[in-house]
Image (cartoon, rainbow, N blue to C red; front, side):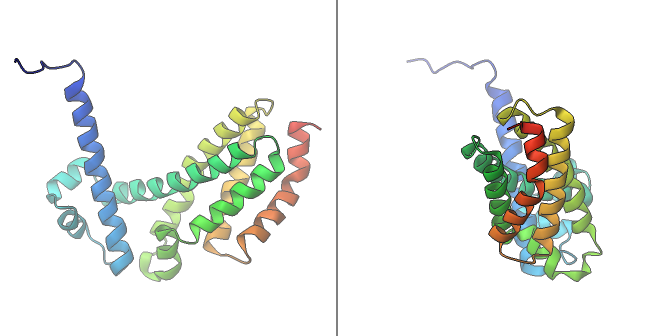
Length: 204
């Protein structure tokens, strides 16, 4: 019986999947090394060796150490935002509850997030990870959350959605790095603080 012939698009799908696996493997190696030895002691050579690839492959894929770290931070933020987004959608009928539950969930997950732990514990990073977490967090999370707000509550305009998103991201990152109280307590305070604005953009 003749074998199945090639299907249009298969090589492209395979190449995309293979590259995704490669990038995930490399970023996983960054995470493992940073947690075990600290960020300052994690080199590109170590990452390549742990991932089982050559240094040339590593540089071909990411270009620089900074780009690799940015990819690592962005992936972790995406995971946090995805979980918080589910909480928002689950409480779509009550914006204040959605805001409170999503914010609390974000803080609870962030407290166990390797990137956050590394920044808090490793004072030798010279602010590299902190700057990336803040910058990438505002870019990735801010954009995702602003889009989410308009999807769940279409009556909210783009400018108002952006204000809420940027405010929430800044507060979330600040409280994740310098926790002052239980996540539920902090989330309740933030929800009450933003309640008047939420009422004004959503209406009665």
